[in-house]
Length: 202
Image 1 (spheres, one colour):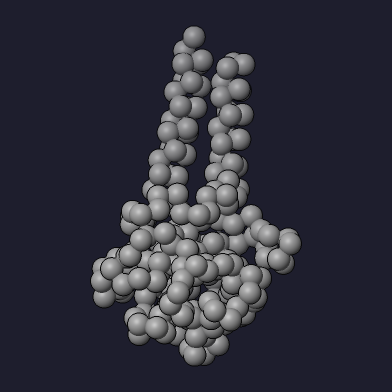
Image 2 (cartoon, rainbow, N blue to C red; image 1 turned 135 degrees about the vertical axis):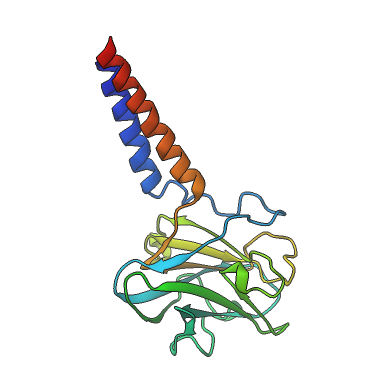
């Protein structure tokens, strides 16, 4: 019985650890040089505005950001916002008002080359995933709250795949959990069920 309680406590700790900002320190992109194979889908968490904070940039190209909500660009971002060469860390803009569950697609406007790149890789003409995303635990020094970090690769075809050409933190968005997160949770749940069954038999 004690073992099953311990195992349950470990599973609960793992569960809350996965739901918390455990991956917030995964910046920069951990597999630099290789395309991120994760296909991201972003949705609005609640009805309200989508906030965007400029985080950093390393690009020589000039880029701006726009947001599509259910496939339609928001008026607030249609001209492009948060230019990577004129913005400072912590600069904030509202990308527009959304309803809970709306599908959000981030658009990087590469002014230098004329390319348009999307967080939904199926929309990219080169077929490449141009974003890396993870949770963000906040940066009080720069006034950036907890949110979702999204880093862009601005080179058509992928370039160096460092996903740091222009980076943002967004509020009021959720990324669909990655398959490995579900697999870990199911494995833990299966282990608990197996342990409880064995303790009942014994």
